[in-house]
Figure 1 (cartoon, rainbow, N blue to C red):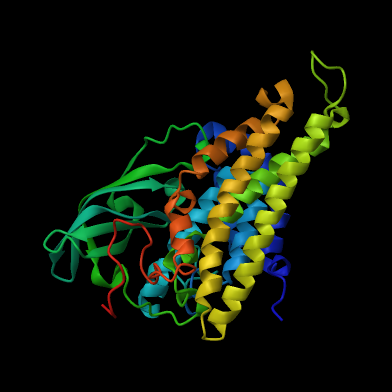
Figure 2: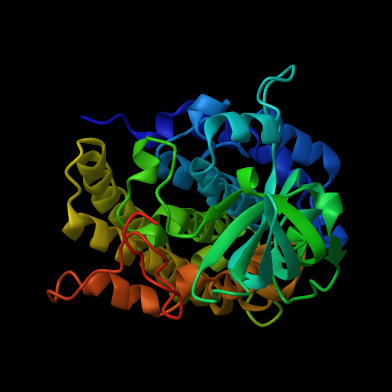
Length: 396
């Protein structure tokens, strides 16, 4: 029997950081990026290294551990959680690098071990031209959450001469330019700016072909659906954002009324109904992720992936994103005019979830990807599930 992922030390570290994360939430929102002391605390806790291979000094935690760690951070502040979530997703790509090259890149042998914080984008929005020993990259990596504090930046690109081939390279942050364009309704504290590369050289030892076999041998790199492998934390981030909203409203429900109704929120039946529906929606979505995720993960660890469970895992994840958004949409009007004031974070979480819902992990093609196995159709496996990108081909 697998241990409960919530009991993992990484999740417990995230829980221990909740008071600090919450205390910095207003500053993070106002400045558009987490403060340095918050970033350092997250780095110290290992939360930026959750999917770095253990052979390179990373934590290499199981996916459901990362899911709950990200969820715990989002209960305190969705923006800080989002930055850690994106770094975790992108750090999964480090498994494609040779261990010795990865250790050199992230400083695994330096005092204190790796303190890497990876930002960037997996979308191949750049173009690369082959050069001796590497590639010359031009273009823009979009939505690079946490770019201000990154130690490495992922730039995904298409080969100018072979546009059907896509790659990812790890660049040093000072090789390119941050384009400060992040100005949105929600997740404003994530600093998800663009990153421009202009004739930047990326060596082969820091570059991998998208869809190629990883060098890392752990089970994280054997999940037969790259969409769920990369995006499982999105469900955790959304559920944490919603649970934080629910917890906050419950805390104040007996104390607040409104100008049009002297009764407290807790005394109003329509509020209690909305609260119950919201909590049930979040709780059931979390349980679905845990149930099918545990089954799928065990089958992968055992070397016999259960594709049905993996397909349900994809459904559970996109459902978590939608369920969390819908839960807060139920709660917001039920809280009356209290919901619109910034003394609560409910209005911020409402905005944050509207933005989070637009990530690839929350888009409708995930429902398609999750139901294909049920219908006996070819699964979107071992390659990007994004419809306009090439499918996995052999061992290239």
